[in-house]
Image 1 (cartoon, rainbow, N blue to C red):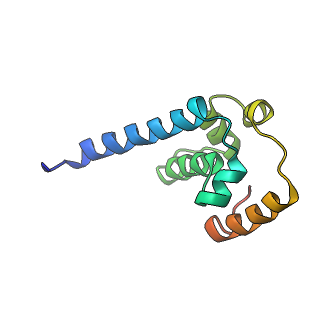
Image 2: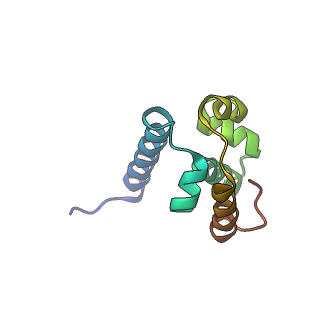
Length: 109
């Protein structure tokens, strides 16, 4: 493989992130965030939080709600009403454990 400079690598990584986002938002909106968290240890909300954290680290003020709207392309509550379903008690219990293990107790849902 040829050497990849830092700028090109950032562009490649950004393109991969956009592809993941588009896949989750347009091709698989049926996949529930709680199921992603329980199986993979992250979900769409984590991705939006990572966007927020990256912006904040670069001196760009961004709230959780702003990051979610940027990621989801609409207010989170609108996307949630369109695509998310109620989770049963077992999924909620698994989520509490997965959230604590993967996100930590200091982060909000």
